[in-house]
Image (cartoon, rainbow, N blue to C red; front, side, top):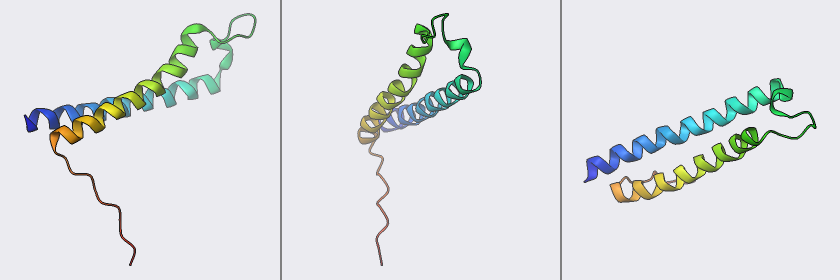
Length: 84
């Protein structure tokens, strides 16, 4: 069970990073040429709005699932550094 949970945790970490990378790349593409993502009235296209909202929300949701799987896998979190 532990090895399967550990593999799932590592897979979710990868998915989370890919979702954040996709969001940053889409934001960069939008910043470079925002006219491709607007209609003739200047409104944001529905698919562009869904991507702008959906990618970060999905990344946060996967992060929560990742934390849950980490506890199930028994992976110990690093302790914060102590002051001397």
